[in-house]
Amino acid sequence: MFTALAATTLLAHGGPVGPGIGLAFVLVPLFWFALIAVFFAIFGRRFRRAAWARGGYGHFNSASRGAESTLAERFAQGDIDEKEYRARLEVLRANAYPEQPKP
Image 1 (cartoon, rainbow, N blue to C red):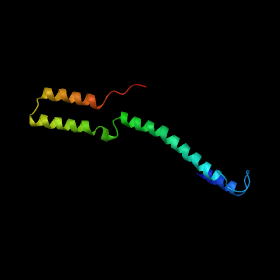
Image 2 (image 1 turned 60 degrees about the horizontal axis):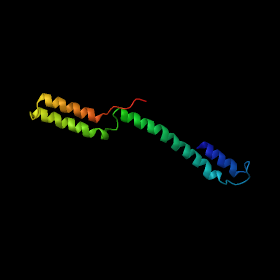
Image 3 (image 1 turned 120 degrees about the vertical axis):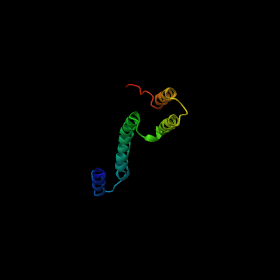
Image 4 (image 1 turned 90 degrees about the horizontal axis):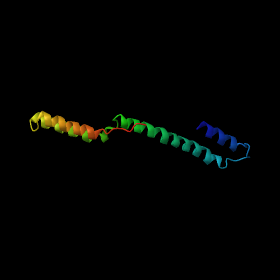
């Protein structure tokens, strides 16, 4: 930001190109916006993937947690026995958090 301000001020007061701002008024800020966008695209993607691998961003896993609570309620009410509860819970957890490929 300060670089863009300094460059435009220098060019406005007769810098090496001559008097007037010219294209520097547009190109210097566009360069910095593009650089910041590339930075967020690269590192933001890494942070999102890391959060997903840790089980973050809860709305993706909320369906499986709702299914687990429903299963627990059915077990508590006596609709299913312990053996069936554990088998279904194992299937739910295996499908909710698939194995991440190793880099």
